[in-house]
Image (cartoon, rainbow, N blue to C red; front, side):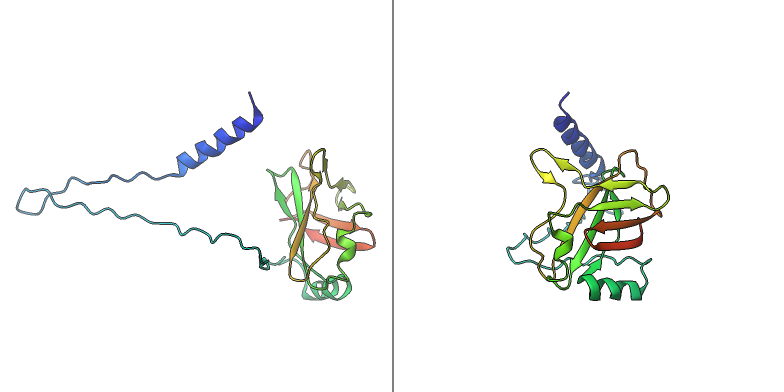
Length: 183
C-alpha cells in the first residue's frame, strides 16, 4: 500500500479520534411542567492562528535549561548565536539542532555549505550526519544568516542511538558546541 496514503490515513484517524461529539439538543424538561426545555449547547472555538506574513518574526522557544548562563554568553559573543535545545523528532529517528542568530557575521560558519555538520554522541563516540535527500538536498538551512531568525538542521538518529538526557557535541567547521543535552 502507498506509504503517503497510509500516513494520511493515520493522521485522519488521529483527528477523528480527538474530536469530541456533542449532541445538538438535550432532552430536558422544565421543572413541574413536563414540557421540553430549550437546549443550550456550549461549544468551545479554537482561535485560528494568524496567516504567516512575509515579514519575519523571531521565534521564541523555551531555552535550554541545562546550559549555564556563561556558556550561553560564550556562544553569543564568539559565534553570534543563541543555541536552542536539541530535540528528538520523527519518533526519535532524527535530532533537531536549532539556533537563533544574534550576529549574522559571526554566525556565517554555521550555515556555510562547505562545512559538513556532525553531531557526536559523547557516550558512544558515534558521529551522526545531516541526511541528504535526492530531491531536497541536505536537511539543513544554509542561507545567509539574518539577525533575529532561527535556523535549524536535523541529524539522522537511525537505530535511536541518542536518547533524551544524552550529552552530545555539534561540530560545524570551526564551530563546536560541547556537552549539549538532548531533550
